[in-house]
Length: 409
Image 1 (cartoon, helix red, strand yellow):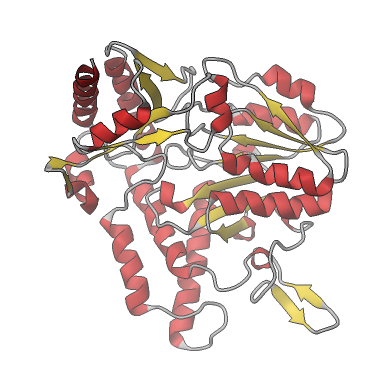
Image 2 (cartoon, one colour):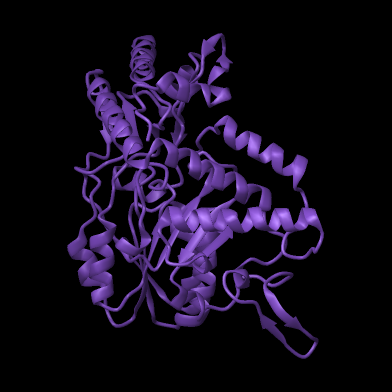
């Protein structure tokens, strides 16, 4: 376990990109909700994979293939332990959160959703946890229902309870909102849904980098996340699913590896988890993801959460001292994201000018247009924090916003 504050300089040295100069200013990277930077340990693991054990997995008897297969399956075991899954059979490697959700929407939907059935999502979801369910509803003639949130950014759980019914087939909810930073009470949501006999998919893209996740304690039916948001590479993600559901669900894609036998008359499918992993997997990405997981585990997820919570509170206090500042999302339980507008300055203009000072933020609707419509706006400026960010960077951000505001005035 690493005390982040006491070791922040050495932690930052693990991330080579933080040495970058942007327009002759040191990079201040505050776009971590979009993707996190990668420590040298992860970068070196990717290089090592291609240099020393690059061979297709599961299909070769030769030495390199055996090495690559063992590393890939060890990565699966690492993820299973990280999420406290009861078995690595419940860990499916995908390209990311989006593909994981699409896999469930297609496969679970094919098996369990019929015309007139209902899927429930929330008003604060990322598009990737809305559109796949809309597509499912269009295919099946099902109905999409929505749980609203209040102006603080907190879900109305009474509405959720009222929406649950005999035709509800699944509830899909973000653990943490990528725009509001709200930490939803997913354990309570899951209990409520299970009492009504309804399974729950949790979008963990914004929670996995910031807190300990125990899928057995949560009792989640499905839990999904992306490697690139937890200091790992792009193009690799995870679907955790309870074995009882995955066993019943048909394959998502066809091809090599997901089969047991193939003839022109009939194909039989492989066992879990391979039934859902058609084709050559990203075996380099999976081992690099495992390295990223080991990296945050060495620091300690509880340490990360405490450090980032302190940083978020400090940033919120400092930003609220700026004239004209409006922060969207004031939930009592919040993580690592501040979405804002400053006076009448368009977020794009603010973000562009802050970039000239070396400050990297996100502008736009953040793939959450329903959230923007809730507040009657089109976009926000979003700062999102990671374990390598500092209060000095927050101070520089505040100074930069004041400079831009004064320029417009």
